[in-house]
Image 1: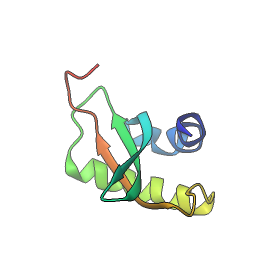
Image 2: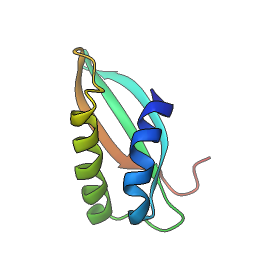
Image 3: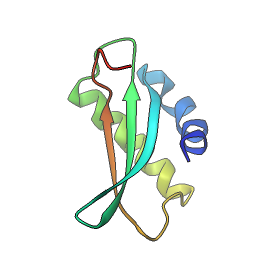
Image 4: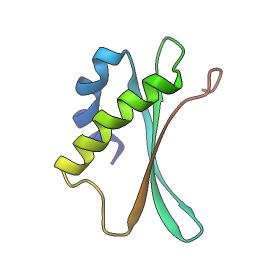
Length: 83
């Protein structure tokens, strides 16, 4: 799934100077969550996450990426210093 989402999203968010670092599914309180972690050479602030989220959510909806059992998409930035 990481490769599929990266291929669809990276070109669209390139103008924001961010890219998809990781994609994984987690479970919280019995609900599956699609996690998309963004990274950049620069600091990613809340405004940038919001802009990227709008683009990514639109792509996910248009390409019907989510399975019926995934209830939520969580898009956030990688913490600096993480490998």
